[in-house]
Each structure stands twice: as C-alpha cells, then as structure tokens.
Image (cartoon, rainbow, N blue to C red; front, side, top):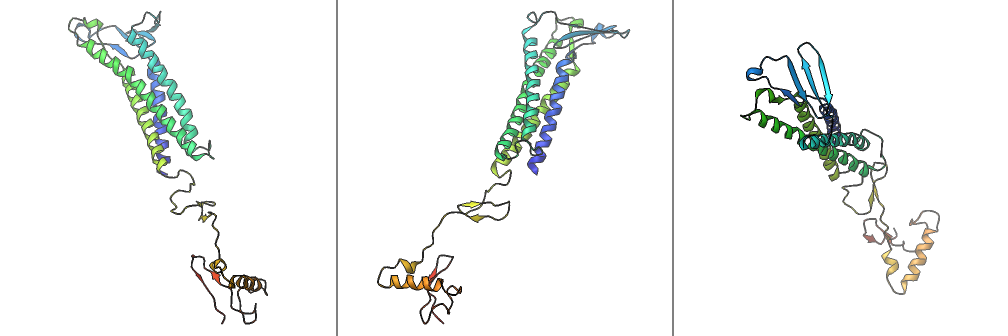
Amino acid sequence: MASAGLELTGFFLGLLGMLGTLVATVLPYWRTSAHVGSNIVTAVESMRGLWMECVYQSTGAFQCETYNSMLALPPDLQASRALMVISVALSVLAVAVATLGMQCTVCLEPAAAAKSRVAGAGGALFFTAGFLALIPVSWTTHEVVQTFYQPGLHNSMKFELGQSLYLGLASALLSLLGGALLCTSFCQEGGGARGNGAGGYPYPGYQAAGGGGGLRTSSQTYRNPALQVGGANTGSRAHGLSRSAGGGGSGYGGNATRGSKKAPGYDVTGLWRLKSGG
C-alpha cells in the first residue's frame, strides 16, 4: 500500500507540473520591463515571452504581437521554445504511461511485473520532462539577471523576471519530484512481490495456490526400502504386501493375513520402520 500511495502522489505532482509547464510555455510573462531610475513612472509596460511580445498601456489597452520570423529569433529563444515543447510532450506521454502502470488502474492487471515497469517508465518520463523544462527557465533567468546589472545598458532596455519564469521553475520541480516518487515506488516493488507472487518460500518447487498456503509440487518418488533389499525374501515380502493391501480394506491391519508379519511401512518424513504383528 505504501507503493500505491507513492504512485498516486507522484502522478498528481507530475500532472500539476505538466499543467504548469504548459501555461508557462504559452504565456508571454518571461521578461517584464524594469521600473528603475527614470523609468519608474511609465505609461507603457512591455512583456516578452517565447511566442509573442505584449504591451500594456495605462489606459487599459493590451496588445500582443507574435514574432514575425522564427529563423530571425536569437538562438537561445529558439532553443527555449524547442525544450519547452518537448517537455510538454513528454509530460503528456508520461501521464498516459503512468496511468497504465499504476496499481489503482485495471490496465495490464494480469502482468504485474510489466505493470510495475510501465509505472517506472512513466516516472522516468516525468523526470526527463522536468529536467528539460528546468534548462530554459534557468537559462533565461541567468540572462535576465546578467543583463539587468550590465552597467552600460539604458534603464528602458532592462527587464525583470516575469511570472512565467517562477511558474516554470515550480512546474519543473514538481515534475522532477513526481517522477522521482514514481521511480521510487517502482524500486520498492522490485524487491518484493507486487502482486500475489510466490516469493520468499524457502523450499524448492513451491507454488502459491489461490493466495493461501502452498504445497510442494516437486516430483519425488518414495520407494519402500524393504522392497529394494536383494535376497531370497524380496519376492515373498512383495507378495505379502500385495496380499495385505488387497484384503478387506484395512490396509496394514491385523485381519488381512493369517499369522503373517505386517508389510513394512514408510514414514512421510523419510524414516522407515517395520511394523510387527500385535
């Protein structure tokens, strides 16, 4: 049950990370204009994102314009676009894969080992998606901070960290944490039996039957040592054993034969003994 709780927690954290990464990718609040120096009071506030640049005026007008050419964009912006899109795609795939592999679903129920591996694969996808989303967010944050403290740059050209960067950072961490929890639950299930496995029984040939106690199914032939002793009395002993077994249903009882010794019996524990007539 502990692994099932880890799976649910990791799945919902990864789902929240996917939604946050998608919102951070679409919104244009990656860079916002800095209000410093003579630019403290301004009637226009500009914002830049991965796909568009927006302007908000003090009159309440809000205008956005997409970038005209993709090839004319800076290389860091193109790389950020690609990484965020790949991160969102991997997160969507991770949600689908993890749904198939979690214990609370009925998909792949007959194959417990395969189901556990599918859940671990979903966790790995979540972790990869979070790592890919963390790269452009950290890259853009470093660039904004470095540009802000550049001495020769005019204040109107400086930008601050936008809300999308904070949202992207939190979403990336959630995806990393969710993927790590899913992988942890998979590792915990790898050491033991996730379903009704037959692990831990110390004797060979054990098979579990219906979830209850199991029996040994190894094929072993128990032979009567008295019938394996060579000599003249072997045939007579076997004949006496068959006569006593075919008697009045009493087996090795005293009424099967007249005055003859009882046939040697064999104990289940592996020790044999001769039963003498009473």
